[in-house]
Image 1: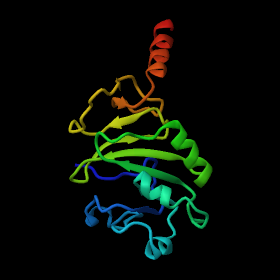
Image 2: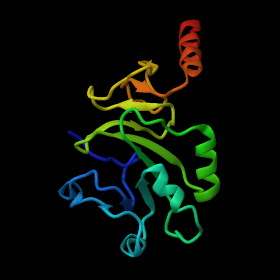
Image 3: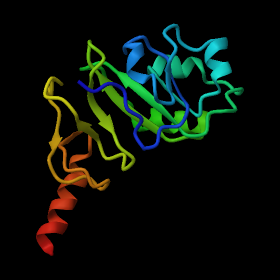
Image 4: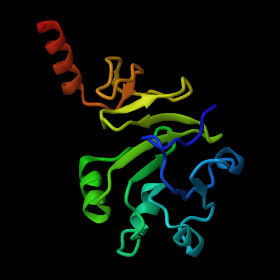
Length: 166
């Protein structure tokens, strides 16, 4: 099973503020887990990106994370409500970095992840419950061919109409 992955390679120095992942998975990368959330040790790490729950990120909504230059990755559990456009706008105003979402299973496995195209979350595991989710099987603007959830049905429909019109 895959674990947290940074949405764009190569990953910058990233602080993960949840204890959902095994510590050995990131031994050779620039991703470090801070099991107790943001504190002096995470600040001293000077992360360029942060992966955390929305509640943790909102608690960080303050000046003083000068090292944050790359992204916020909002981590969810299955069936939790994801970011709204208003949430994304608020996070952009606060941190001035792109925002990505990932859904993480109980064992720390990556179930779905947003790519740089921000057109839904790519399905990474069949274990993700898809209750009332629109699944878009069209190729993503990022080039991946995996199905996505959370994309807009209108955007998917426009892509299909454009492809048919060609």
